[in-house]
Image (cartoon, rainbow, N blue to C red; front, side, top):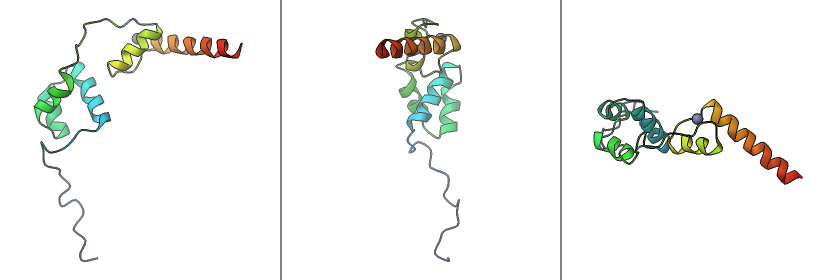
Amino acid sequence: MTSVAAPGAYAYPRARTRKLTPSQVREIVKRRKAGERAGDLAEEFGVATSAISYHTNHLRVGTKPIAHGTYRGRQQHLRAGSKPCADCAQAHRTYMRDYTRRKAA
Ligand SMILES: [Zn+2]
């Protein structure tokens, strides 16, 4: 019992050495697109601002409008790291239902 270090003594990871998990990257991308500043996100996630830019720079935000209400639109949502809207989700359900029906026939 005595050899165990007090929990939480070094719980704080040093900034700039921490790696981002895929789910953290997804969240950062989403929040950057929503307009949050890279510096704020960097601080919150304990990484350098350049790491935030690295993960979000390649995104050409808003170059192509999403074709809402289509199966393709749903894929565009997912590629952009966002949740498909109701119209796109419905289009996907319809697509999958037709697909299953075709297969069963
Ligand atoms: Zn949509």
